[in-house]
Length: 163
Image 1 (cartoon, rainbow, N blue to C red):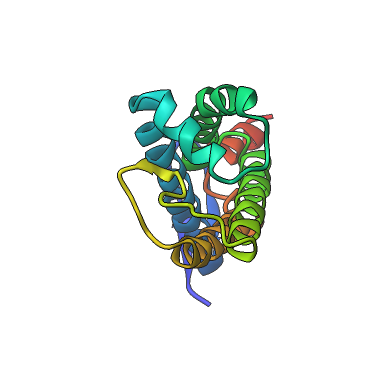
Image 2 (cartoon, rainbow, N blue to C red; image 1 turned 45 degrees about the vertical axis):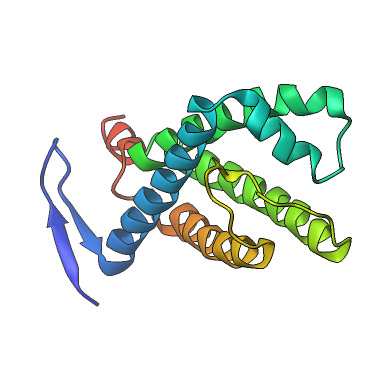
């Protein structure tokens, strides 16, 4: 196992390879959530609301609320995870969101719903539901790695070391 040393901001600890992998997973998963949330937040909410309605799981009246709330939740969780603030909570919340998204995609596939855009990255991406399902599995794995190994090189870790 490769061991690195981190000697900045008063931290003097051995950093193992898995800690570096955890940091990279945290940055990738957080970055994807920031990007996806920003694309949806910057676009008209009606576009994402329409994508939500095509899944036929919540009443149409709630789809606009979800279209306004979900992008910002994704952005904030992504920022928390990438920055290493509330790392384990952010990673766990992202895992929960991805599992919910996977459930939506899976039920749309099984029910053969005519979903033209999953809404994952706004209206600009039109990948197949199967592709998005596979992509989300990779993102879920990254978030799980971030949950397990992403806390060592983080703001959380620096705060804990000064207590």
